[in-house]
Amino acid sequence: MADRKTLKIGLIGTGFMGQAHALGYATAEKVFDMPYGLSLHRVADVTEEAAARAAHRYGFAGWTTDWRDLLADPEIDVIDITAPNALHKEMALAAIAAGKHVYCEKPLAPLSADAREMAQAAKAASVVTQVGFNYLCNPMMTLAKQMIEAGELGEIRSYRGIHAEDYMTDASAPHSFRTDPVGGGVLADLGSHALATAEYLLGPITGVMGDCVTAINSRPRRDGSPAPVEIDDVSRAFLRFDNGASGSIEANWIATGRKMQHDFEVHGSKGALIFSQERFNELHFYSTEEAPGRRGFRKIEAGPEHDPYGMFCVAPGHQLGFNDLKAIEIAGYVGAIGGQHPEPFGFDAGTRIQMLVETILASSAAAAWKTI
Ligand code: NAD
Image (cartoon, rainbow, N blue to C red; front, side):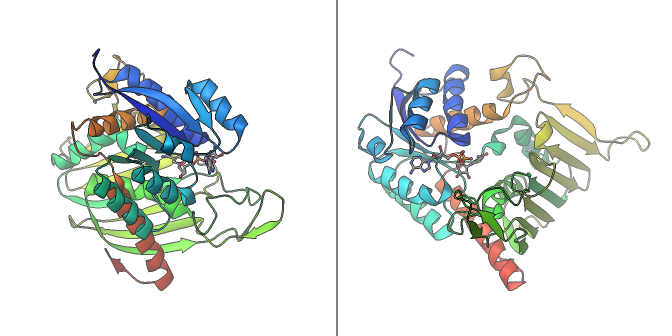
């Protein structure tokens, strides 16, 4: 691979996701055979302390406190946006205008019109895009999709999905980009993941009936003053799928005690699947083809048969971790940049999720079903 080109990365944001992406690049480089090498070139954050610390810790060659410096840097091939939601559009459009490939965290943009503008700009500039829907990169999620598509569950009739955590349970959890009307709400934040999983497994959603609720009406700003909150803390939606199945999703960030309940159940005429992200190296399968009296959910443990688990570990049951999903996402994205396959989850796909989010919010406001 001596003549393999190296993609130089410019990362914006060094918080929770900035770290996950930085570690993901390092792992992807070591684990996967990719068409490009990866180089952590420069990182941007708002303070010198954060940017310099991240550069040192993750091995970026340089850092800046102005993300626009990354766009002006001709050596950078990929701009990676892990900044708050409301900044995604401005940063992505500027990166696209500078001819960079763009990897952006979810939700792509708070408004679907903005997301669409970003997707159209990327297409016009022929740059390759990726949105951070890492839960879809889990080999057990791929297995679930394969089993559904192979007919192992028979005719798919019903679906239940949920993404629940508890980091906003405390009413004194500070007002942030997540509770800002221009950037937030639980449906955009966590519901986007639940919707992406629902469509990944069952195909297109064609109708929604939402119920989106603000449970905590005020949260303290950093200076302690109260900020009124109008965005949703708990959102649910009934769903109709194009394949005839009905279903539901819940997005909840005040689910006391829940840390990462990205779960689903799929019920078919011949079988069912249960999955929980809190035990994401397992998939539970029930088959009506077992003899009566012997039926029950059977645990399938992740192993090397479940691609690309084997790239990380030769032994079954030893388990992947959250940051490994980012490495898998990055490997898929780099393959798309190298022309090996279409974008796994590009800006068009991210726009669709945002459109679903918006339609559920509109359905809740109107107390009426909406067609997609
Ligand atoms: P965070 O608050 O931990 O990190 C955000 C970072 O962006 C901070 O370092 C902040 O200083 C930096 N930042 C803010 N303004 C900036 C600017 N103008 N220039 C440069 N840096 C700036 O937040 P987070 O939890 O990492 O969330 C970031 C994004 O990732 C959000 O869009 C969120 O929805 C998404 N996210 C995705 C997942 C996932 O599983 N895919 C999980 C969590 C968050």
